[in-house]
Length: 198
Length: 198
DNA sequence: TTCTTTAACATACATACGGTATGTATTTTA
DNA sequence: TAAAATACATACCGTATGTATGTTAAAGAA
Image (cartoon, rainbow over all chains, first blue to last red; front, side):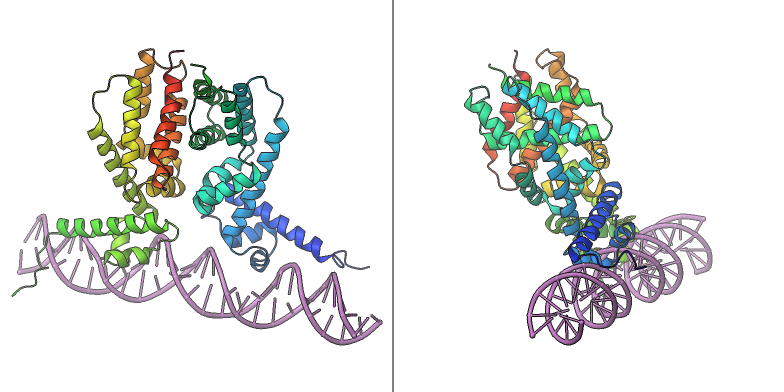
Protein backbone atom coordinates (compact mmCIF):
# COMPACT_ATOMS: atom_id res chain seq x y z
CA UNK A 1 0.00 0.00 0.00
CA UNK A 2 1.73 3.07 -1.26
CA UNK A 3 1.31 6.51 0.19
CA UNK A 4 -1.19 8.31 -1.94
CA UNK A 5 0.83 11.51 -1.89
CA UNK A 6 3.58 9.92 -3.93
CA UNK A 7 4.14 10.34 -7.63
CA UNK A 8 2.44 13.69 -8.00
CA UNK A 9 3.67 15.76 -10.88
CA UNK A 10 5.70 18.85 -10.07
CA UNK A 11 3.23 21.01 -11.94
CA UNK A 12 0.36 19.74 -9.82
CA UNK A 13 2.29 20.15 -6.62
CA UNK A 14 3.28 23.65 -7.62
CA UNK A 15 -0.24 24.66 -8.55
CA UNK A 16 -1.63 23.33 -5.30
CA UNK A 17 0.71 25.15 -2.97
CA UNK A 18 0.40 28.29 -5.00
CA UNK A 19 -3.37 28.15 -4.78
CA UNK A 20 -3.22 27.45 -1.06
CA UNK A 21 -1.02 30.48 -0.55
CA UNK A 22 -3.25 32.73 -2.62
CA UNK A 23 -6.39 31.59 -0.82
CA UNK A 24 -4.91 32.04 2.63
CA UNK A 25 -3.36 35.39 1.76
CA UNK A 26 -6.58 36.67 0.23
CA UNK A 27 -8.49 35.90 3.39
CA UNK A 28 -5.97 37.26 5.85
CA UNK A 29 -5.05 40.37 3.88
CA UNK A 30 -8.69 41.32 3.43
CA UNK A 31 -9.67 40.57 7.02
CA UNK A 32 -6.72 41.95 8.96
CA UNK A 33 -4.97 44.14 6.44
CA UNK A 34 -1.58 43.72 4.80
CA UNK A 35 0.52 45.18 7.59
CA UNK A 36 -1.16 43.13 10.30
CA UNK A 37 -0.77 39.89 8.41
CA UNK A 38 2.58 38.17 8.85
CA UNK A 39 4.07 35.64 6.52
CA UNK A 40 4.07 33.08 9.35
CA UNK A 41 0.33 33.69 9.66
CA UNK A 42 -0.17 33.09 5.97
CA UNK A 43 1.83 29.90 5.69
CA UNK A 44 0.19 28.50 8.80
CA UNK A 45 -3.23 29.03 7.23
CA UNK A 46 -2.05 27.57 3.95
CA UNK A 47 -0.32 24.58 5.56
CA UNK A 48 2.97 25.24 3.86
CA UNK A 49 6.28 26.68 4.99
CA UNK A 50 7.75 30.10 4.52
CA UNK A 51 10.25 28.53 2.20
CA UNK A 52 7.42 27.68 -0.15
CA UNK A 53 6.10 31.21 -0.03
CA UNK A 54 9.44 32.75 -0.92
CA UNK A 55 9.95 30.14 -3.59
CA UNK A 56 6.76 31.20 -5.33
CA UNK A 57 6.77 34.94 -4.66
CA UNK A 58 9.62 37.40 -4.59
CA UNK A 59 8.38 39.00 -1.41
CA UNK A 60 5.28 39.67 0.63
CA UNK A 61 4.18 42.51 -1.63
CA UNK A 62 4.38 40.25 -4.69
CA UNK A 63 1.98 37.90 -2.96
CA UNK A 64 -0.47 40.72 -2.40
CA UNK A 65 -0.09 41.74 -6.01
CA UNK A 66 -0.97 38.25 -7.18
CA UNK A 67 -4.04 38.26 -4.94
CA UNK A 68 -5.11 41.67 -6.20
CA UNK A 69 -4.59 40.74 -9.83
CA UNK A 70 -6.73 37.65 -9.47
CA UNK A 71 -9.43 39.71 -7.81
CA UNK A 72 -9.39 42.36 -10.49
CA UNK A 73 -9.60 39.67 -13.13
CA UNK A 74 -12.72 38.23 -11.54
CA UNK A 75 -14.35 41.64 -11.31
CA UNK A 76 -13.69 42.32 -14.97
CA UNK A 77 -15.22 39.01 -15.97
CA UNK A 78 -18.26 39.54 -13.77
CA UNK A 79 -18.93 42.88 -15.36
CA UNK A 80 -18.44 41.64 -18.90
CA UNK A 81 -21.05 38.96 -18.29
CA UNK A 82 -23.62 41.53 -17.17
CA UNK A 83 -23.15 43.72 -20.21
CA UNK A 84 -26.40 43.76 -22.14
CA UNK A 85 -27.61 45.86 -25.02
CA UNK A 86 -28.77 49.05 -23.36
CA UNK A 87 -30.88 51.71 -24.96
CA UNK A 88 -29.05 54.93 -24.17
CA UNK A 89 -25.43 55.52 -23.20
CA UNK A 90 -26.63 56.81 -19.85
CA UNK A 91 -28.52 53.62 -19.20
CA UNK A 92 -25.49 51.64 -20.22
CA UNK A 93 -23.43 53.60 -17.71
CA UNK A 94 -25.85 53.12 -14.88
CA UNK A 95 -26.18 49.43 -15.55
CA UNK A 96 -22.42 49.16 -15.72
CA UNK A 97 -22.09 50.97 -12.43
CA UNK A 98 -24.61 48.68 -10.81
CA UNK A 99 -22.73 45.66 -12.08
CA UNK A 100 -19.54 47.10 -10.68
CA UNK A 101 -21.11 47.74 -7.30
CA UNK A 102 -22.51 44.26 -7.21
CA UNK A 103 -19.21 42.66 -8.14
CA UNK A 104 -17.48 44.65 -5.42
CA UNK A 105 -19.74 43.26 -2.72
CA UNK A 106 -17.90 39.96 -2.62
CA UNK A 107 -16.49 39.81 0.91
CA UNK A 108 -13.05 41.31 1.19
CA UNK A 109 -12.94 42.45 -2.40
CA UNK A 110 -13.39 46.17 -1.79
CA UNK A 111 -10.84 46.00 0.98
CA UNK A 112 -8.31 44.41 -1.35
CA UNK A 113 -8.91 46.42 -4.51
CA UNK A 114 -9.71 49.81 -3.04
CA UNK A 115 -7.71 49.99 0.17
CA UNK A 116 -4.88 47.51 0.62
CA UNK A 117 -3.90 47.42 -3.03
CA UNK A 118 -3.48 51.16 -3.57
CA UNK A 119 -1.86 51.59 -0.18
CA UNK A 120 0.77 48.89 -0.50
CA UNK A 121 1.33 48.55 -4.23
CA UNK A 122 0.75 52.18 -5.10
CA UNK A 123 -1.75 53.82 -7.38
CA UNK A 124 0.43 53.34 -10.46
CA UNK A 125 0.59 49.59 -10.10
CA UNK A 126 -3.14 49.51 -9.49
CA UNK A 127 -3.70 51.48 -12.66
CA UNK A 128 -1.61 48.99 -14.60
CA UNK A 129 -3.64 46.14 -13.19
CA UNK A 130 -6.91 47.89 -14.03
CA UNK A 131 -5.77 48.45 -17.58
CA UNK A 132 -4.70 44.83 -17.98
CA UNK A 133 -7.94 43.41 -16.62
CA UNK A 134 -10.67 46.01 -17.15
CA UNK A 135 -9.11 47.42 -20.25
CA UNK A 136 -10.22 50.98 -19.61
CA UNK A 137 -13.89 50.17 -20.00
CA UNK A 138 -15.03 53.42 -18.45
CA UNK A 139 -12.89 55.59 -20.68
CA UNK A 140 -14.07 53.72 -23.74
CA UNK A 141 -17.71 54.16 -22.84
CA UNK A 142 -17.22 57.86 -22.26
CA UNK A 143 -15.54 58.29 -25.60
CA UNK A 144 -18.37 56.47 -27.28
CA UNK A 145 -20.98 58.68 -25.63
CA UNK A 146 -19.12 61.81 -26.51
CA UNK A 147 -18.79 60.78 -30.13
CA UNK A 148 -22.58 60.46 -30.16
CA UNK A 149 -22.81 64.03 -28.92
CA UNK A 150 -24.46 62.98 -25.70
CA UNK A 151 -21.78 64.06 -23.33
CA UNK A 152 -20.52 67.46 -22.32
CA UNK A 153 -17.58 68.50 -24.41
CA UNK A 154 -14.72 67.85 -22.03
CA UNK A 155 -11.47 65.88 -22.14
CA UNK A 156 -12.24 62.25 -21.56
CA UNK A 157 -9.25 61.11 -19.57
CA UNK A 158 -9.59 63.34 -16.50
CA UNK A 159 -13.35 62.99 -16.48
CA UNK A 160 -12.98 59.24 -16.50
CA UNK A 161 -10.50 59.55 -13.66
CA UNK A 162 -12.89 61.58 -11.52
CA UNK A 163 -15.82 59.33 -12.24
CA UNK A 164 -13.93 56.18 -11.40
CA UNK A 165 -12.93 57.76 -8.11
CA UNK A 166 -16.58 58.43 -7.36
CA UNK A 167 -17.57 54.90 -8.35
CA UNK A 168 -14.88 53.45 -6.15
CA UNK A 169 -16.05 55.49 -3.20
CA UNK A 170 -19.62 54.36 -3.77
CA UNK A 171 -18.57 50.74 -4.01
CA UNK A 172 -16.58 51.05 -0.81
CA UNK A 173 -19.43 52.73 1.02
CA UNK A 174 -21.85 50.02 -0.01
CA UNK A 175 -19.38 47.32 0.92
CA UNK A 176 -19.11 48.96 4.34
CA UNK A 177 -22.80 48.68 4.96
CA UNK A 178 -24.20 51.91 3.56
CA UNK A 179 -27.49 51.61 1.77
CA UNK A 180 -27.02 50.39 -1.75
CA UNK A 181 -29.92 52.12 -3.47
CA UNK A 182 -29.04 55.41 -1.87
CA UNK A 183 -25.59 55.34 -3.37
CA UNK A 184 -26.83 54.03 -6.69
CA UNK A 185 -29.21 56.94 -6.81
CA UNK A 186 -26.49 59.44 -5.99
CA UNK A 187 -24.36 57.92 -8.73
CA UNK A 188 -27.25 58.25 -11.17
CA UNK A 189 -27.74 61.90 -10.26
CA UNK A 190 -24.09 62.63 -10.79
CA UNK A 191 -24.04 60.85 -14.14
CA UNK A 192 -27.30 62.22 -15.47
CA UNK A 193 -25.99 65.73 -15.02
CA UNK A 194 -23.17 64.90 -17.37
CA UNK A 195 -25.47 63.39 -19.96
CA UNK A 196 -28.01 66.14 -19.84
CA UNK A 197 -28.53 67.64 -23.31
CA UNK A 198 -28.39 71.13 -21.93
CA UNK B 1 30.29 81.04 31.44
CA UNK B 2 27.24 78.89 31.58
CA UNK B 3 26.10 76.56 28.86
CA UNK B 4 23.36 78.29 27.02
CA UNK B 5 21.27 75.16 26.88
CA UNK B 6 20.77 75.20 30.63
CA UNK B 7 17.74 76.43 32.47
CA UNK B 8 15.29 75.94 29.68
CA UNK B 9 11.72 75.49 30.74
CA UNK B 10 10.21 72.04 30.42
CA UNK B 11 7.47 73.42 28.23
CA UNK B 12 9.99 74.90 25.82
CA UNK B 13 12.05 71.75 25.76
CA UNK B 14 8.95 69.68 25.20
CA UNK B 15 7.68 71.88 22.40
CA UNK B 16 11.04 71.84 20.65
CA UNK B 17 11.51 68.09 20.55
CA UNK B 18 7.89 67.60 19.62
CA UNK B 19 8.24 70.03 16.75
CA UNK B 20 11.47 68.38 15.61
CA UNK B 21 9.76 65.00 15.59
CA UNK B 22 6.78 66.28 13.65
CA UNK B 23 8.93 68.03 11.08
CA UNK B 24 11.16 65.02 10.53
CA UNK B 25 8.24 62.62 10.41
CA UNK B 26 6.31 64.80 7.99
CA UNK B 27 9.21 64.83 5.57
CA UNK B 28 10.08 61.16 5.77
CA UNK B 29 6.50 59.87 5.77
CA UNK B 30 5.62 61.93 2.74
CA UNK B 31 8.79 61.13 0.83
CA UNK B 32 9.27 57.45 1.57
CA UNK B 33 5.90 56.39 2.89
CA UNK B 34 4.90 55.28 6.36
CA UNK B 35 5.94 51.65 6.05
CA UNK B 36 9.36 52.49 4.63
CA UNK B 37 10.12 55.00 7.33
CA UNK B 38 11.50 53.51 10.52
CA UNK B 39 11.44 55.18 13.91
CA UNK B 40 15.26 55.11 13.97
CA UNK B 41 15.16 57.05 10.70
CA UNK B 42 12.84 59.63 12.19
CA UNK B 43 14.72 60.23 15.41
CA UNK B 44 18.00 60.46 13.52
CA UNK B 45 16.57 63.20 11.33
CA UNK B 46 15.08 64.96 14.34
CA UNK B 47 18.23 64.65 16.45
CA UNK B 48 16.48 63.03 19.34
CA UNK B 49 16.26 59.48 20.66
CA UNK B 50 13.61 56.87 20.30
CA UNK B 51 12.85 57.35 23.96
CA UNK B 52 11.74 60.89 23.20
CA UNK B 53 9.50 59.70 20.42
CA UNK B 54 7.74 57.15 22.56
CA UNK B 55 7.48 59.67 25.35
CA UNK B 56 5.57 62.05 23.13
CA UNK B 57 3.56 59.61 21.04
CA UNK B 58 1.90 56.36 21.95
CA UNK B 59 3.20 54.61 18.89
CA UNK B 60 4.35 55.19 15.34
CA UNK B 61 0.81 55.53 14.04
CA UNK B 62 0.03 58.22 16.60
CA UNK B 63 2.94 60.20 15.23
CA UNK B 64 1.52 59.94 11.73
CA UNK B 65 -1.85 60.97 13.04
CA UNK B 66 -0.38 64.10 14.61
CA UNK B 67 1.34 64.94 11.33
CA UNK B 68 -1.86 64.40 9.37
CA UNK B 69 -3.96 66.46 11.77
CA UNK B 70 -1.58 69.38 11.53
CA UNK B 71 -1.67 69.13 7.77
CA UNK B 72 -5.45 69.00 7.62
CA UNK B 73 -5.61 72.00 9.92
CA UNK B 74 -3.42 74.02 7.59
CA UNK B 75 -5.50 73.06 4.58
CA UNK B 76 -8.70 74.12 6.31
CA UNK B 77 -7.22 77.49 7.22
CA UNK B 78 -5.88 78.04 3.72
CA UNK B 79 -9.30 77.44 2.25
CA UNK B 80 -11.12 79.63 4.75
CA UNK B 81 -8.84 82.50 3.83
CA UNK B 82 -9.72 82.17 0.15
CA UNK B 83 -13.45 82.14 0.75
CA UNK B 84 -14.89 85.24 -0.87
CA UNK B 85 -18.44 86.29 -1.56
CA UNK B 86 -19.32 84.44 -4.73
CA UNK B 87 -22.27 85.14 -6.94
CA UNK B 88 -23.84 81.73 -7.49
CA UNK B 89 -23.53 78.52 -5.47
CA UNK B 90 -21.88 76.90 -8.48
CA UNK B 91 -19.24 79.62 -8.60
CA UNK B 92 -18.72 79.23 -4.89
CA UNK B 93 -18.17 75.53 -5.40
CA UNK B 94 -15.72 75.96 -8.21
CA UNK B 95 -13.75 78.58 -6.35
CA UNK B 96 -13.72 76.35 -3.29
CA UNK B 97 -12.47 73.46 -5.37
CA UNK B 98 -9.71 75.57 -6.83
CA UNK B 99 -8.66 76.68 -3.37
CA UNK B 100 -8.62 73.07 -2.27
CA UNK B 101 -6.50 72.02 -5.23
CA UNK B 102 -4.09 74.84 -4.61
CA UNK B 103 -3.76 74.04 -0.93
CA UNK B 104 -3.08 70.41 -1.76
CA UNK B 105 -0.10 71.29 -3.93
CA UNK B 106 2.16 71.86 -0.97
CA UNK B 107 4.86 69.20 -1.34
CA UNK B 108 4.01 65.97 0.41
CA UNK B 109 0.58 67.10 1.46
CA UNK B 110 -1.44 65.04 -1.00
CA UNK B 111 0.70 62.04 -0.17
CA UNK B 112 -0.02 62.45 3.53
CA UNK B 113 -3.71 63.36 3.43
CA UNK B 114 -4.86 61.23 0.52
CA UNK B 115 -2.62 58.18 0.57
CA UNK B 116 -0.68 57.48 3.75
CA UNK B 117 -3.36 58.76 6.09
CA UNK B 118 -6.27 56.70 4.78
CA UNK B 119 -4.07 53.66 4.35
CA UNK B 120 -2.54 53.61 7.83
CA UNK B 121 -5.11 55.35 10.01
CA UNK B 122 -8.16 54.15 8.14
CA UNK B 123 -10.91 56.03 6.39
CA UNK B 124 -12.92 56.46 9.57
CA UNK B 125 -10.17 58.26 11.40
CA UNK B 126 -9.59 60.45 8.37
CA UNK B 127 -13.26 61.33 8.31
CA UNK B 128 -13.09 62.34 11.95
CA UNK B 129 -10.09 64.54 11.23
CA UNK B 130 -11.82 66.12 8.27
CA UNK B 131 -14.87 66.88 10.36
CA UNK B 132 -12.77 68.39 13.14
CA UNK B 133 -10.76 70.61 10.79
CA UNK B 134 -12.85 71.21 7.70
CA UNK B 135 -16.15 71.02 9.50
CA UNK B 136 -18.01 69.34 6.67
CA UNK B 137 -17.74 72.36 4.42
CA UNK B 138 -18.72 70.47 1.31
CA UNK B 139 -21.85 68.95 2.80
CA UNK B 140 -22.92 72.33 4.15
CA UNK B 141 -22.49 74.02 0.82
CA UNK B 142 -24.49 71.32 -0.92
CA UNK B 143 -27.31 71.63 1.58
CA UNK B 144 -27.34 75.36 1.07
CA UNK B 145 -27.52 75.03 -2.70
CA UNK B 146 -30.29 72.48 -2.48
CA UNK B 147 -32.34 74.66 -0.15
CA UNK B 148 -32.10 77.34 -2.82
CA UNK B 149 -33.52 74.86 -5.32
CA UNK B 150 -30.39 74.95 -7.41
CA UNK B 151 -29.35 71.37 -6.95
CA UNK B 152 -30.82 68.14 -8.15
CA UNK B 153 -33.15 66.66 -5.59
CA UNK B 154 -30.98 63.95 -4.12
CA UNK B 155 -29.78 62.95 -0.66
CA UNK B 156 -26.92 65.21 0.33
CA UNK B 157 -24.72 62.86 2.31
CA UNK B 158 -23.89 60.29 -0.38
CA UNK B 159 -23.59 62.97 -3.04
CA UNK B 160 -21.12 64.83 -0.87
CA UNK B 161 -19.23 61.61 -0.39
CA UNK B 162 -18.95 60.96 -4.11
CA UNK B 163 -17.96 64.54 -4.89
CA UNK B 164 -15.26 64.64 -2.26
CA UNK B 165 -13.86 61.43 -3.70
CA UNK B 166 -13.69 63.08 -7.11
CA UNK B 167 -12.09 66.22 -5.67
CA UNK B 168 -9.51 64.16 -3.87
CA UNK B 169 -8.63 62.30 -7.02
CA UNK B 170 -8.26 65.55 -8.91
CA UNK B 171 -6.04 67.01 -6.20
CA UNK B 172 -3.90 63.91 -6.23
CA UNK B 173 -3.59 63.91 -9.99
CA UNK B 174 -2.53 67.54 -10.04
CA UNK B 175 -0.07 66.95 -7.22
CA UNK B 176 1.38 64.13 -9.27
CA UNK B 177 2.09 66.40 -12.20
CA UNK B 178 -1.08 66.22 -14.26
CA UNK B 179 -2.19 69.46 -15.81
CA UNK B 180 -4.02 71.63 -13.36
CA UNK B 181 -6.41 73.43 -15.66
CA UNK B 182 -7.42 70.21 -17.32
CA UNK B 183 -8.54 68.73 -14.05
CA UNK B 184 -10.15 71.94 -12.90
CA UNK B 185 -12.15 71.95 -16.09
CA UNK B 186 -13.22 68.36 -15.64
CA UNK B 187 -14.28 69.18 -12.11
CA UNK B 188 -16.30 72.13 -13.39
CA UNK B 189 -18.03 69.96 -15.97
CA UNK B 190 -18.95 67.41 -13.36
CA UNK B 191 -20.29 70.06 -10.99
CA UNK B 192 -22.16 72.10 -13.56
CA UNK B 193 -24.15 69.04 -14.51
CA UNK B 194 -25.40 68.85 -10.96
CA UNK B 195 -26.32 72.50 -10.83
CA UNK B 196 -28.03 72.55 -14.16
CA UNK B 197 -31.62 73.81 -13.80
CA UNK B 198 -32.92 71.06 -16.03
C1' DT C 1 17.39 1.21 -15.68
C1' DT C 2 20.43 4.12 -13.71
C1' DC C 3 22.72 8.42 -13.20
C1' DT C 4 22.40 13.39 -13.30
C1' DT C 5 20.06 17.45 -13.04
C1' DT C 6 16.60 20.38 -11.68
C1' DA C 7 12.48 21.89 -9.45
C1' DA C 8 10.09 22.44 -5.09
C1' DC C 9 10.34 23.06 -1.17
C1' DA C 10 12.30 23.00 4.21
C1' DT C 11 15.45 24.77 7.70
C1' DA C 12 18.55 27.89 9.73
C1' DC C 13 20.16 32.33 10.07
C1' DA C 14 21.11 37.42 9.88
C1' DT C 15 19.25 41.77 10.41
C1' DA C 16 16.06 45.18 11.70
C1' DC C 17 12.00 47.06 13.65
C1' DG C 18 8.42 48.25 17.06
C1' DG C 19 7.31 48.67 21.69
C1' DT C 20 8.30 48.31 26.74
C1' DA C 21 10.76 48.48 30.97
C1' DT C 22 13.91 50.75 33.47
C1' DG C 23 17.38 54.22 34.56
C1' DT C 24 18.88 59.25 34.88
C1' DA C 25 19.20 64.23 34.78
C1' DT C 26 16.78 68.51 35.07
C1' DT C 27 13.05 71.31 36.31
C1' DT C 28 9.20 72.38 39.11
C1' DT C 29 6.68 72.26 43.35
C1' DA C 30 6.02 71.90 48.31
C1' DT D 1 16.12 72.83 50.17
C1' DA D 2 14.00 68.35 49.80
C1' DA D 3 10.55 65.80 47.19
C1' DA D 4 8.19 64.91 43.22
C1' DA D 5 7.28 65.16 38.55
C1' DT D 6 8.78 65.71 33.84
C1' DA D 7 11.47 64.71 29.85
C1' DC D 8 13.92 62.12 28.19
C1' DA D 9 17.99 58.09 27.40
C1' DT D 10 19.35 53.23 27.40
C1' DA D 11 18.68 48.45 27.41
C1' DC D 12 16.10 44.81 26.20
C1' DC D 13 12.54 41.46 24.15
C1' DG D 14 9.75 39.40 20.87
C1' DT D 15 8.70 39.13 16.21
C1' DA D 16 9.00 40.16 11.40
C1' DT D 17 11.17 39.96 6.71
C1' DG D 18 14.28 38.22 3.56
C1' DT D 19 18.30 35.17 2.42
C1' DA D 20 21.43 31.36 2.30
C1' DT D 21 21.84 26.75 2.46
C1' DG D 22 20.30 21.97 2.87
C1' DT D 23 17.10 18.08 1.40
C1' DT D 24 13.81 15.32 -1.18
C1' DA D 25 11.50 13.83 -5.13
C1' DA D 26 10.43 14.23 -9.98
C1' DA D 27 12.20 14.65 -14.77
C1' DG D 28 15.48 14.10 -18.37
C1' DA D 29 19.86 11.96 -20.28
C1' DA D 30 22.71 8.07 -21.02
